Length: 307
Image (cartoon, rainbow, N blue to C red; front, side):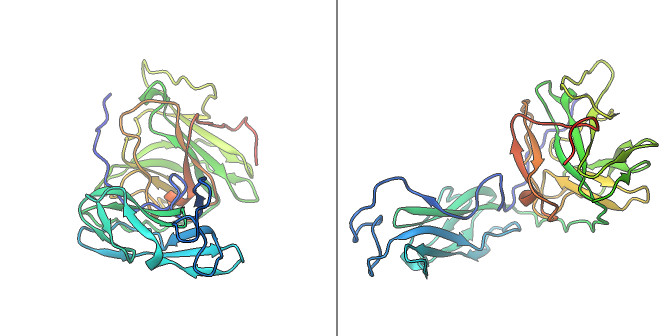
């Protein structure tokens, strides 16, 4: 069965997949006080640089955003070095930046906007898109989160999985709950599987859903606790829903999908491989903050470890 392969919409990212701000010191040896790598006019060298605020929504072409650069000095003081930094964009077709840190979105695309001060760099990642992001769905909470998933694996669509985790302090019955998906745009949704009677996830434990279709075999070493048949969309969204349809958790791989939280992730496209998106933090309701790329993937079922 073939899935629609659609070019992903781009959005502003600021999260763990690619570092968006912080210190990244150039390993080159310090230069003289008058050179970019030397101390400032007072003789105090910078030890780190932070650029922000990194945006958390898409930028439309023609709009602007103001960045600032703050240096931490060796004497533990900090200094605004916005106008003293060298600014550059890695993709001027997507967005440009001037000497004052003003970013101007040009056309859809991805770029890193960097500031450099005394040989130290920090950056924000920008994505520009013509379509405003869809507002996130309200979440009913409940302790159950999508902890890891992949829309493709080494064996392509056959190796798809969705891993759930209970982040609450008590066991939760998920019997009758649904796991569904939504396409990259529109409001249509589809239930992939309804969790069976007796499905209980203990605190810190997992529940694994794997794809199993006729003549298609999941090749992962960890068997699923339940199977789904329809393939995951390469650029859609996945959600966990209570029996009444209220969304408990969602993660998306496109700007316009109904199922996502905050800034969605980038699609893997049609490339097969042993990689996944894995939750690296709690549930901040921002997919880009909560998930990072994991390679190899590490699916865990109910028989696996908890905590």
